[in-house]
Image (cartoon, rainbow, N blue to C red; front, side, top):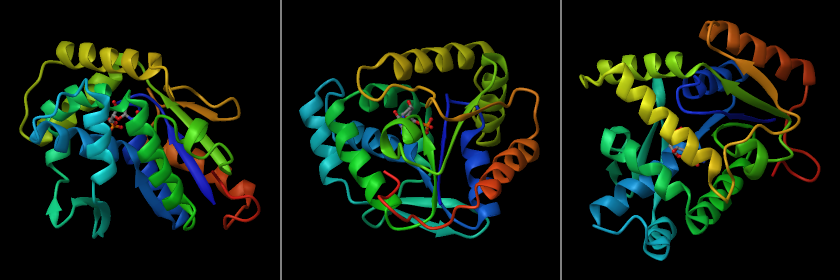
Length: 230
Ligand code: DC
């Protein structure tokens, strides 16, 4: 079974997608981490992030892998280096939309995401997993939440990492990122026509997970038979 979960930053995607994967007993893939990894490496190499060829080259050469971790989401490695924390810093978060807008980067990462999804049952989380990466997924979900609630959630996440940012700044950054992600020419953030839309503003994580898992179980699909999910 392939489940895609898309939505804007702070809509609860990561927590919910991980929980849904755990509930259904299938693998979880954080596609945003892949765009973040390209951004981190490009910044470290001193690339101009506007330069599509240069950044595309970074994506193509990147030796990225996810490793399952106990009691936490999988860890992200480039070669032998663990970049799980490094890809979540504000400097990467502020630049990643620029990198994710390059068609060359998207082409390379979409191919890798499809190859991973072809290996077996999976929950993919991102912005275009239901529209572009796996348009034939068994279940597509689109999560939303009010901008204020999304900023509040991001603030709590950052505070847990010891980073203090005002709610107003975070809301502004989120809206800017939404605009970039929704207005780019290639694979913009968009709800798939047949996606189940869930507004998570006033729902608990458990309620959202339950809603998605109930729908998944009702579909009763297992395995990636036929023409394939992507
Ligand atoms: O979900 P996130 O905040 O980790 O995503 C990081 C960035 O990557 C965000 O700006 C949107 C982009 N992204 C994308 O364009 N397509 C995806 N499938 C996943 C993320």
